[in-house]
View 1 (cartoon, one colour):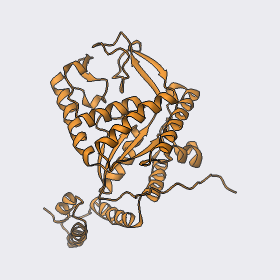
View 2 (view 1 turned 90 degrees about the vertical axis):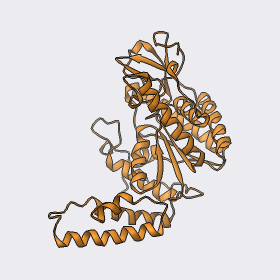
View 3 (view 1 turned 180 degrees about the horizontal axis):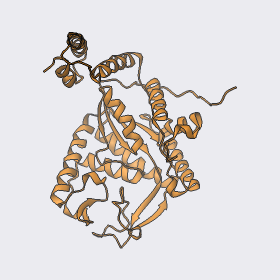
Length: 331
């Protein structure tokens, strides 16, 4: 008997390699995949605005990167003894406006320069529910969409569900600007399998359906836009609460690892996967904790792996093994 429905995933026409630069944006699920890409030595930049859930906030962030926008004091608001940006995660907040602006503008310029040379942009959309600022919010930002609520009072926001046509319009515009900014760039869209149950079960499903419809419409329109079914892998393939954390909202390690393996299988070629296996072996050795660090056995272990890492670096000098070389050389 079959207790799961496995399905084939369309292969990426141009597989991702270690020579590619990858910008990842969107929900917390983005960062789960991004951490794995970094572990395997891919060149990545993750969420330069912090975690973003809705299409408007993603589009606003990309527009800022393309235009190298310089945020000013007028773009911030003061609340709860700190300065914050409605466009950014709280990790960009500061005790002073100067502190917040330094972090924000530095991140925008990093993203701007990275995006110039990026080969792929991963965009993971989490929700088509948006929270717009009311007249109770500060700095005259009424009607603007907040990427993060910064724990502000509920009456500062008005919640509404974007229509599929609105999501398409917002994303279509920013996709055009991306292609004009960097003609070689390709975009991979995913829908986050994280369930936004605070909105309600029915409301979460309406939200995901809106995103799925919009993204597939755009994928049919643009040659350099692809869809990876992270959402379907968790919801329709695994389809079991055993693959969720205790909150029944976030996919657990096993689910995320399963999606990662499917991503590697569909988006990377054999040569890249072999290199990833070699890097994995080095990672395991690097994490090894010796019983006796001064023993001859451990010294031979270090020497052997130093030679392995050095050989791998000589063959792939675009990869950064500085940390591992330093460790295995006993410096």
